[in-house]
Image (cartoon, rainbow over all chains, first blue to last red; front, side, top):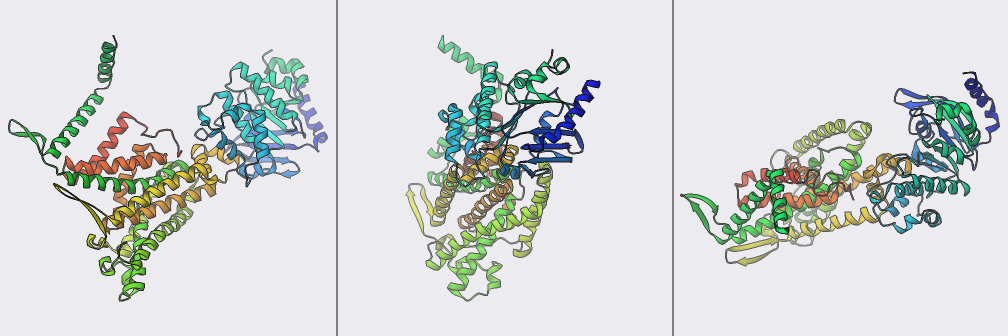
Length: 253
Length: 384
């Protein structure tokens, strides 16, 4: 018990160190309708950083993502991205700030072709950005091969690639990925994590929610453990993996 | 072995679903009946007529033409209904009355243009309230350049005017409850339908107006041994217009940015929002497209039938719903195909049954299609 409160307050005092960070979430309370899910959540992602949120089912991990992207009812606290206050801003405005979001489910337009999906990703631009498109095709060659295929007929892994490709069309500064490995076959899970690494190496900051907590923590720079809609632990990925308490309670030993 | 297996599976289908057998029987019966009727052969069993009769070929062909034209109007109207369903998420019961709006606004425009530039013996009030027949104005598309201009302007204003009305309706009635359930929107649309319908009633009265008589319109006849099959210039106008508008919608949805965004939004509204697609603008454009097609459809109805009343759009909506559901609700190609099927069924049914039951037969066909393919002909192809 004392370890947990210690860790939580420790995280709170560290926040000053993050005043320069790209994404700053401060004392965020949010939920759906009248139902509050998140209480007093603090979270930071620095420029170029790769951060994951892990935690048990129902902890509010996806809700954090949705709240950052303006998809929940805002109840308190602030969200700042790249020095502008995006608290409570609707998603179709947030997209202009350089933040991209890949939802967990239904994250492609099934009846549109692969290419049309990517074009929709760049809807807010006057022209389809050829350089971004070329970059997406380079990162996910399968999408170029299948650009005329109806997106809904592709495999789960390919659909997930397309969903990420769509979000990358605006060359965002930061990508929010909600469980990119969910529902993928084991060999595809590795490929997916590789792709996320590559995207991050190319300079895009990542905030990711993952069920596959061990793998995610191994790969990320920093991790947050979220429990019951509150911050519980915050540390580098490897430190969290090494922490006895975290291992026992949240990573299955 | 192949034959035996084939036999077994065929019988298997009938055992599993005896309804298919019944449907096949009814279908074959109707085809046989039609062939005998066209040949003028009547079969009696114990003094009761069981099959055949007499259906002159020219009358049959006229029914095919009439069914096709009706089907085109249904399809044109159905596109808007289907788009409203897939993009705004509700069945719009006011859609039929938007046909009425197009029919009246367009006809009034034509009357005023023809009456003021042409004859100039009628005052605007008489013209605007459609108190005279268009024959007195020579209002036929082949009746000289004034009449032609009056009809073209009528078409344009029917489309544009309906768009205006539809946008006002959306702003006042639907936009404030955009996020509510589809049932709330549906019930609101019934209220809108009543308001629009009775406004038309209030302005133009309960009598149907009648425009040109067929005599004024250039027509083309083919003489068969049983009589003539006639197509007039207004029928051709409807045909050309409807087909080109449908092609236009297809091109727009498949190639334009906004068209793709409409399909994207029909597919997945939540994702459209997080992708940055301006959903309100897409919705407005949906109304513009659906409204203009429906308004034009209403005016072509007037051109084709030469008459229209305040209640006709509402009655017509039933056929449009049947077509859209039969085609697979939400799919615009389904609406087009469903329109043709329903239109043909409506007119061809009079070969077999009294014309008073023609509409019922269209619904019967819809039910049959839904029994065989419950989600409609173009199921799962949301607006694409």
